[in-house]
Length: 180
Image 1 (cartoon, rainbow, N blue to C red):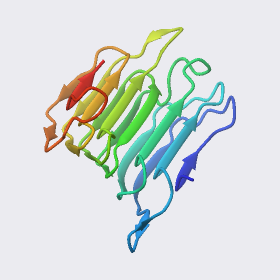
Image 2 (image 1 turned 135 degrees about the horizontal axis):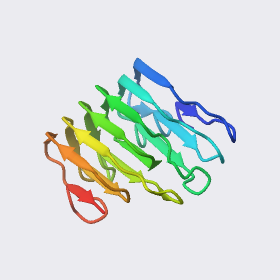
Image 3 (image 1 turned 120 degrees about the vertical axis):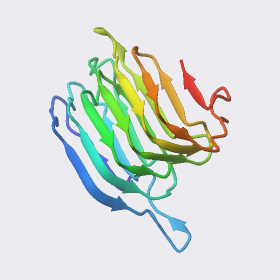
Image 4 (image 1 turned 90 degrees about the vertical axis):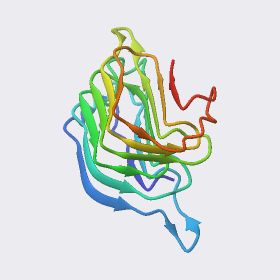
């Protein structure tokens, strides 16, 4: 199971959610507990998460993604989260955001991952309202075996001023930065 799981019921709006200044440490004496450090299960129809503000969150190495977000892009076509920012966090197993909407920024973080995971994986929604846009990945420090960044779908992506160290690019197509 995930260490922290956020799963609103259908039709629930959890906008303006703030996650600030805490540590998740899933391991002790060589044993790692939990699957995801933080899981956002936004797959119920009509769920809305706008203005997520995640800052100062530290997720130590675990069994899978540090942050794992999943959205049903047919039931929630505007995307979740949207109009959101993730800043000044340390994710030791990467961050995966699936089905995000417009205007999401990932800035000033440490993005590390082992295995085939990327430091950051972002899939922008491309629902009935058209493709989401304006994802900004800026000023992060990354080192990931599966590549630093993978972005799929969407438009108007900005990848600027990042420090990428020793990323192997062993992910889906061998690229350190993969924009599909």
